Length: 131
Image 1: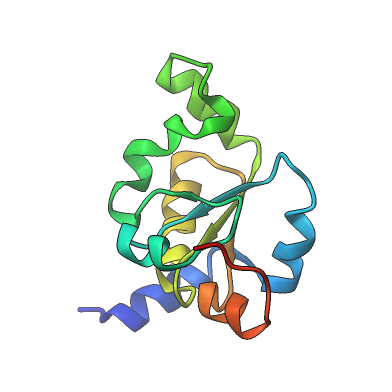
Image 2: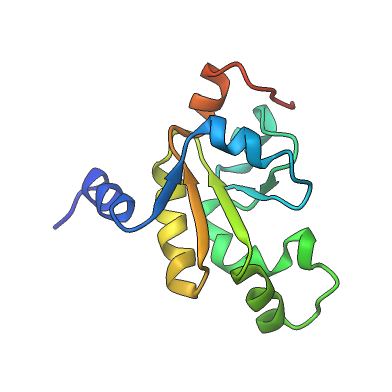
């Protein structure tokens, strides 16, 4: 049996991570897809301006509804469109986003990145937060 830390470590060995400074640079591009996988109460307490909140528990079921593909009514077509784009995932500390990144990779997403250190690292770096 694996504990949560082992599961996260295994996921991190199979995904790509970026740090908050690298994410900040990516956010200069208005087409950047940033998904915050924290729970709504965590997101509402503070988040990165361009983030869309899809909690970890529903990410796979809602990702096709992302605003960048809102005009595409067909779920599979929306997923295919998103699967080829860079998607950045953020949680509180980097654990849930690592698990989410692995899950999206398993769905066929090819450019998925988990933000190492998560929202805590973002705040510790003094980067902008929206409430």
